[in-house]
Image (cartoon, rainbow, N blue to C red; front, side, top):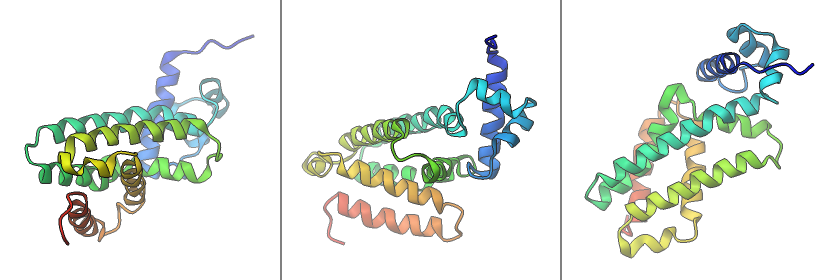
Amino acid sequence: MVQKKKPEVREAILAAAYDLFRERGYTLSTIGAIARAADISAANIYVYFDSKLDILLELYEPWLMERIEALHARVRGLSDHDARVRALLTALWHDLPAAENGFAANLVQALATAPEDDARIRELSHRAEARIAEILEDTLPEERRHIAGDGALARLLAAATDGFSVNHADDGAARLTRATVDVVADLMLGRPG
């Protein structure tokens, strides 16, 4: 007999996983712990999700894309290119990694254990990079947009975001981020260092 899926059970799983991922991180949040927090059996989780990675991606994609959209709106509201570039870099390398107790680090932890050929992670990365590339179009002065033309700069910024996400709790991370933002902003704007 096919078990009927209940929306409230699915939502309880997602809420429990979200809390645990924020508190413990992806690696230390087991299916058993998620099940206990959702007040269901571990086996019942697999009625709703194929894996812990599926649960994370269900939570992470809207979380990430909401923040990228908010970043785009914030950058558009700034009139000066220097302020736009610095806001973009600061959001990607400080604000996003620090948000919600370092929630962004969960994807990096999941990447370390996910199969290399998992298309869902690649697709999410491509969507995020494409949005970052669009933000770069609105951020860079016209004479500097060529540096973002092939998507390589968006990929670099996204990869650096992953690195800052892993290290966000380090005491020196904020200082390092500010210094890095200064250097990279000057490079992106074509200023001598």
